[in-house]
Image 1 (spheres, rainbow, N blue to C red):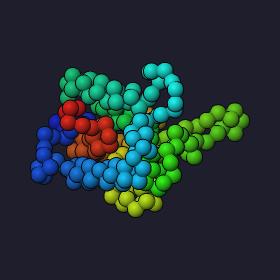
Image 2 (image 1 turned 135 degrees about the vertical axis):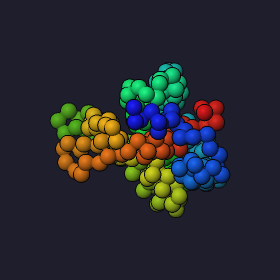
Image 3 (image 1 turned 180 degrees about the vertical axis):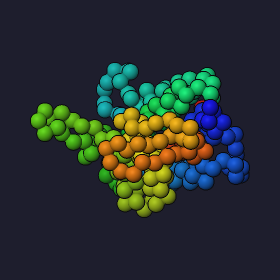
Image 4 (image 1 turned 90 degrees about the horizontal axis):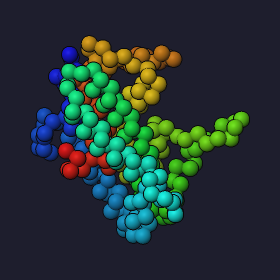
Length: 234
């Protein structure tokens, strides 16, 4: 089938090094490393204790083990990777697992509390244990909390990075995930076709096709770039 010849495991579109131009995402990965290193260094210089606290996502004080979704997301990353590698590249189900994988990484906002709290630390605004609380909405009738989706989280991180002068980091947040793909997966608004992934946009907007040649670098850029990826996850 057409997807089998163009797809990796969703975390690496090749066994390239930084000097290997065959890896289409390498400039982005290099930029992400520089930007995240700069963020960490600035946060540590601003307040070392708050920097250390920022390394603990979903820190809410005393709580039992097994309630941290950031830790769960890291476990899911490894489990998805193993599952994808176990499936034949000719199986259409493999593509759907990769899409679920992409969605889980994109929506892992508990994990993205780390860069948010680092940005707050750089600004001298302390270590907020609910760093995305300003993005939480309330249902008009029930009053129940409506958590922000990945698109809102990434826009917030991008704007905050620009605000503190970390332009390269803002670009990383902007480029890591494709909002159209994220929306299509979340709302089952796509079709896997011979030429690629069709984003139907059934409720309005211009339909879009992501060819299979484009698909793998796009997926790997999100899954590999932000925090989850490390050499022992190859």
